Image 1: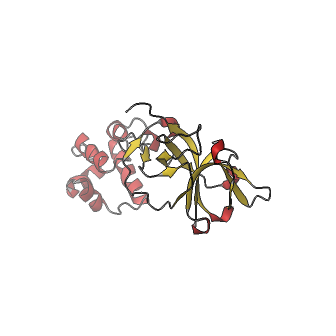
Image 2: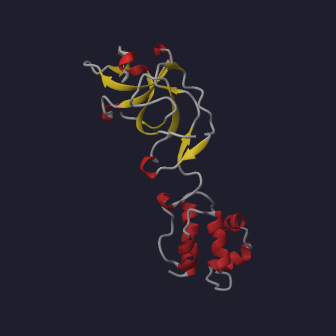
Image 3: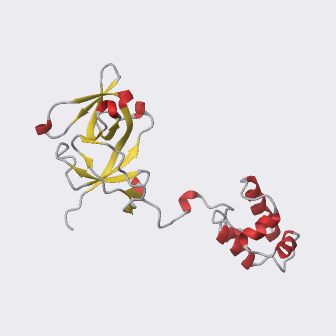
Length: 222
């Protein structure tokens, strides 16, 4: 594939994605003289330079720089190939309690930091644990990493989940082992610690969100 062909492919891709519609817009986006860009589109080697393709890569990072410059590899960078400082699980320093607590509306928009651990990077958030009801599975001060469940039928009953309810159940926010009632209409929340015996039973319709606890971080020293 020639340099001209690669440039045309990039332009057509951007048009397809409705990022731009004209070659004039393309020139303005990458900061390249529109007359010189027109010559490049017509195949002029004088303007089909590394400088031009580097400008394209800098402006539109979804295009692979090596492919732009040499034609080797794939035109588009796959999402899993992108390594950025922003990759990881956002940690929110709010009370996710192992006992029954109120409200889940205090999550800040900006996390304190990101936790990067590839086997669990499909998790959506990390929170510190408070309370004793889930000992010895979870201790206060540990950090749990959670993944939202969108299909209740795929839940693993008896596993620990972070459960968030509406006002009908007093806006509960709690980590508990979750079981399904015989009529399949209610969740049974059960603590691990025998000192916190007694089940909490809530209607499935009152659950706003539910998250699987996929892992935890136990820090032994400061």
